[in-house]
Image (cartoon, rainbow, N blue to C red; front, top):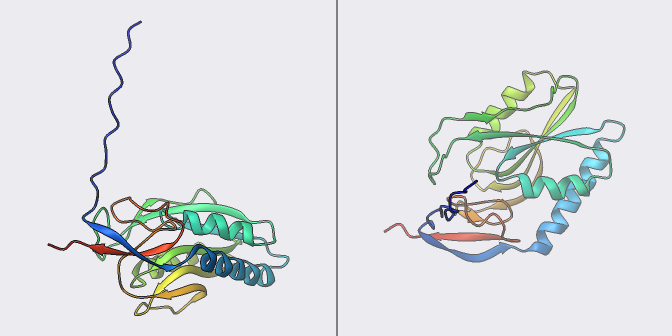
Length: 189
């Protein structure tokens, strides 16, 4: 049996711009995630939380957060899009992947990497609350200085409106693996 020669994997084009200075270090991230984990542990005694992560950006934060919570936790994910491959929000939130878990009568904590305007968070909060969880809270690692933050119980850091990468955040699917949060200097030429 003859196999076709392997083709090289397609390379994603590098987004225009460069990774700038780190604004949140790995040590600062670790300390804040541990503090949020301790808060959730205290708040959810006797009520194991279901962490609902918003893909793709929240996967790094949620992984560290789950380990920082000293309780049994369950995990599920949703994937939504308001950006696509663009760096500008379309203003329309689309569900790409819904939950596998029924949230009815569960203690749900929605976990976001970053709240830009609050559009996606507001949409997901409304959607998940309509499914009748026993309780519902929101957690965001990063919140833009000018974002709507009503209803976000657990917040990691307030950040400027600059484009950011690292610790799960990307531009054009790049730089999620960086251990710190960095400014991204876009080439807008």
